Length: 108
Image 1 (cartoon, rainbow, N blue to C red):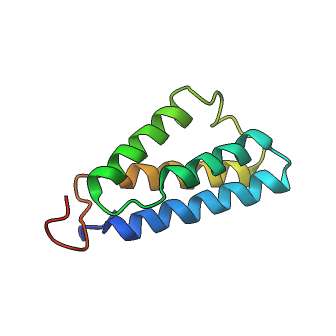
Image 2 (image 1 turned 90 degrees about the vertical axis):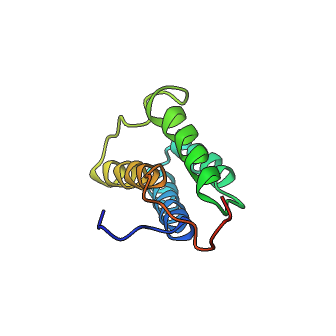
């Protein structure tokens, strides 16, 4: 991450793009659990407009997907799956950054 703060909108867009990549790979590999995880992630990030809500949603997603909850999410069998899972992980980590900024002042 560069020294320039990221905005809530930019990071949310990064998560949405990573989720779309995850879904595409999961569907091409007929990976129903990861397809369902992508559907769940879509619901997690709908309507988020401030950093507090984005951080909370990202923390919940990281806990659910990578630290239990949905099982062996990181156990992948292909390079494409590995790339998609890693991209999503990084996007979710960016959402938890203390450097994250709202685009509009005083909305947090």
